[in-house]
Image (cartoon, rainbow, N blue to C red; front, top):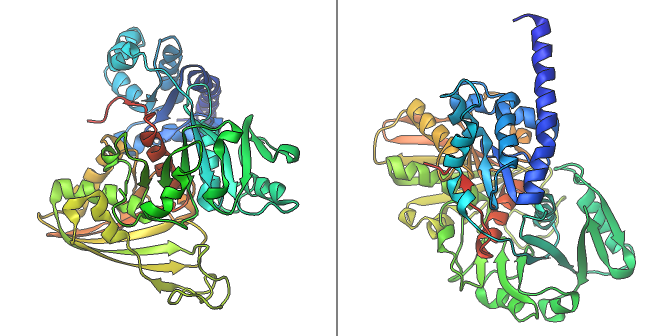
Length: 479
C-alpha cells in the first residue's frame, strides 16, 4: 500500500467516525440504547477513541473492522423502534460482514438479531441515587452516572452526603470532581450553586447534603424518594450499621462499596448478580480485587477445574496508609506509602467463595502495597484438575473476553509492552496479561491487571442497575 493510501484511509475513518458520533448520542438520548464496540462503551467517545475501539476487532477476530462497516448498522439502528438495551455493534458488524458483500440484507439481519428488543415495550422509570461519601470511588461513580445520564437511562444521581460544610467546601468538592490526578479532567461542565448547596454537572442538579451520620438526613425534604444509597465511606460494613441508612426518610436500598461482613451478600457482577432479589435491601459490591479475580477464576474453574491456589496482589497504595512514617493501628501501614512496598493482608481470596462457593477453602491470598496511585495486579497461582498449556489457556480466556457472559468483566491483552498506567480507565473488572501466562501440566500462573478505582466503579454501577431492576439486556446475547 502506498504512503498516500495510509493517509487516505485514515481520513476516511475519521469522516465515518465523525458521522457515527452524533448517531450514538441520538440512540442513547432518544431511545435509551447504549452502543458498545466489542464490549467498549463508545457513547460520548471522541472521534479518535471510536477509531481506536474499532481496532480492538483484530485482537479477537483476527481481521480488521472499520468505521465504514459499522456506520451502516448504526444508521439502520436509528430507524428501528428499539426498547432500551445495550447493543454491541462491533460483534453485530463482524457477524454481518463475514457473510455479506453489501448492505442489501441489513434490515433483515438486524430485525432477526434484535427481535426481542423490537418486540419489547420496556418503559423507563427514573430511580433516585444518593452517594453517601465522595472520595475516590464516590467521585468516579458520579462521573459514570453523569456520563450515562439521559432520557433513556433510569438511574439519576440526586445527592451526595458528606461531612463538613465550612466556607469553600462546596467549591473544593466540585474541584475534586472536575480535576483528577489519575483519571484526568472531567468531560463536561461543572458549576456550583452556593445558595442552594448544589453542584450542577452537565445539567444534572446534585444536592450536597452535609451530615455526620445517616440519622441527620431526611432525603424527602429534597424531593428524593425510594432512593438507592451507595455507601462509599466503609464506616459500616454489616447489616446493622448499614441499616442506619434505611431509617432515613426517602431511602429504599443500600449498596456498600466494600466487602460486607456477616450475612451480607457480596456480589461480583457477572458471577452472582442473580443472587440479588427484589426484597434485598442491603448488598455489598465486594472489593476491587475480588471483582478483578472472581470472573477469571470462574472461567478457569468452569473449563479446567481449580483444586487449590494462591492469589498474590500487587496493589497501589490507598488513603488508609500514611504518606510519611507515622502511627497507624494497622501492621506496617504506618510506614510511608510513597517510599515502600508494604506487605499486608487481604481477604480477597477468601471473599471469592462468597460469590463463587465452589472455590470455598481452595484459595489463599496476600497483598503487597506499592508506591503507585492506581492500577493493581493479581497473580493467580493455580493447581488445576486437568492438563493445560499456555496457548490453549490464553485462547480460551481471549474467547471469554470476546464472546461469553463474562465479556463485560474480563478483558485480554497479548501486548508485551503493557504497563500499569496503560490500564488506567479500563472499564473491565480484570485484564488478563496473556503474554505473561505460564502453564504446564496441571498448574498455571495468570497475571491479571485491574484499575482498582475505575474498573471497580464500573462493576458497582452494574450492581446498582441490578438492585434497582434497570439492568438492560445486551445484544447479541453471549453464547
